[in-house]
Length: 290
Length: 226
Image 1: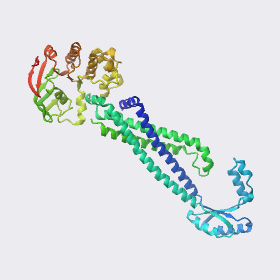
Image 2 (image 1 turned 60 degrees about the vertical axis):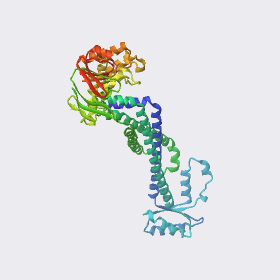
Image 3 (image 1 turned 135 degrees about the vertical axis):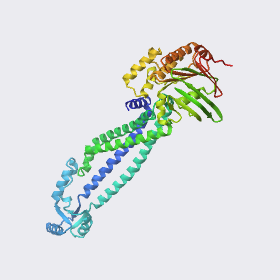
Image 4 (image 1 turned 90 degrees about the vertical axis):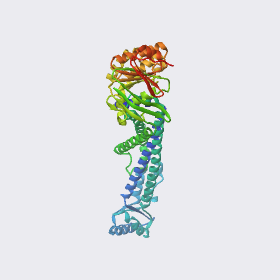
């Protein structure tokens, strides 16, 4: 095996441009795979976040009295599907607004409690009851608007589905493309080394002795591409995390869990070894007649 | 050592070997002679199982190489060293690396390879050229390197297919003397040639092939081109 590794190393060193080209194709493939995987996982987290918060927010009309608010709050608490009701006054809303925009003084200066409506945040025991609760609230004369996160959940679910389908199709196509590129590069190298292979056969080299370096070369291209793609992806995520956190802080997906990234690395490496072997084995079967 | 019994080989309608039978004992030096197309190279290719005959029986050692499994062919070839007319050295490897290739195939360690290659290159008097590439060698040096590659693993048999074909007479004699010396170690040497001067000077066993048939098999034989 050591000898085969030595031969594979020599093969790679002696044709560096083909090695770079094959590794770059693998890099693109695995960069796409990691990007789609991270996007899908991010959207999945967002989906779970919204699903875990079965809340309807009902905004009161301007001028609603505290008595009306208390009446509605008490009525909702009697509902068997409701698990919690929380009143958010104009002052509370302003405090939340200040907290969310504390880094942007320009936004804070313009906002006063008067322009923010008071609201009720109603949590349901079951997310399926959210739309029924929303219907009840919409009929209330004191309520101006009702927001049901069900729409957000549905949108997120569709986006996640689309990312999965597009991701699987794109990555599938790229994996086939990468395997074919490795097949071509390996096939080219086999033709280039025709004399050497012929001599090796005549001096008694076993078929596996001749084939293994080519297979290892394919695996090397795959693993290199996957490793560089992983490092590149992780660097990008690390660089953009502070910026992205401003938008999706509550979801908790960022900063990304290093364990998750290591799992993605492991999966990438396994797939890259498989694709590298598949491409080079195909070339060996097709072009290397021993 | 090597036994051919009624061996026939056809390429299309051409009869390359026609009912060929002979026996070569361990340690013999045998010339296979005949004009171009007589079947000399085919005979050597059959011994290494590069080609299969259409009929007949061939024993190398005690192995029937026609019935041999494909997996066992490399093991057979490890017992045989092959020297070619055009040397077949790898251009991108030095003399040392070309010779080491045989031992790498056998799975020897780097240390063993180093020792054995050095020993063999000194024997064939090519040690000073060990770091040169084939394109930097003269014809004689290239053939000596090829012989070193063939014998470095101490094979039982050395097959030489027109090893002096591309060499001037003086260099050719150097190569023949080297093969003679290898034979003196007890290695069976089978050399295909149509160089009558070499055959007649060396006075070894001569098998004459004509149109695929053995027309003569003589000890201390001669070869006259008619």
